[in-house]
View 1 (tube, each protein chain N blue to C red):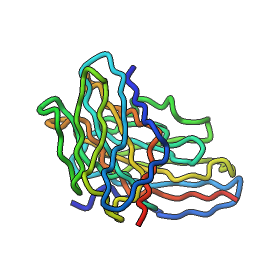
View 2 (cartoon, rainbow over the protein chains, first blue to last red; view 1 turned 90 degrees about the vertical axis):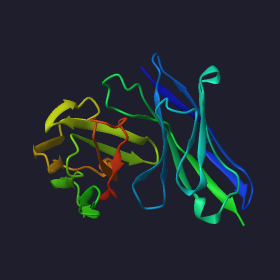
View 3 (cartoon, chains in turn orange, green; view 1 turned 120 degrees about the vertical axis):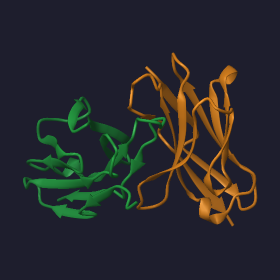
Length: 114
Length: 115
């Protein structure tokens, strides 16, 4: 069964600084990987997805993530944090082998320091 | 597209009462998922449907919870009787497997408070 681990339940960065949110996955088959963002009092919104077409994936709002098979990682980055990036971020995995369920990580709450 | 629609957005009820949450998936999507989110337990998958048929309900906490999908455009999650520990945000999500990679689209959620 696949799983994801998000390192750090809370991350704080200064406005303008690099954002790095960590996600490691476990899957017996090549996975599909996703990052979702949840703003306060809202549902989860898809940021980006990896589906094996390219290892570096660009998403909305300037975020990107790199799939590294050797490290079983799919970390989310943004070069310069903005106040509006404050939210909770979830990594998710699907094995894509007819398993339609997504397995979500426990989430990382990102705080932006002015 | 209107996205996934959930109603009500907020529900406050007393312990013992029946609660019904509603969801309209994105038109054409063939999978529908019900999740529950709490501070303590995070995001939990309760049940999901494919073409209106329940596929996996192993996440449903107990017999007080039931879900139905009478047609492709409507699903309900019912709690009867409700208990304070059911207080949570309940999300509905839908996905389309044909030509996609299983990404799910979430509704805004229903915040349930049981007093």
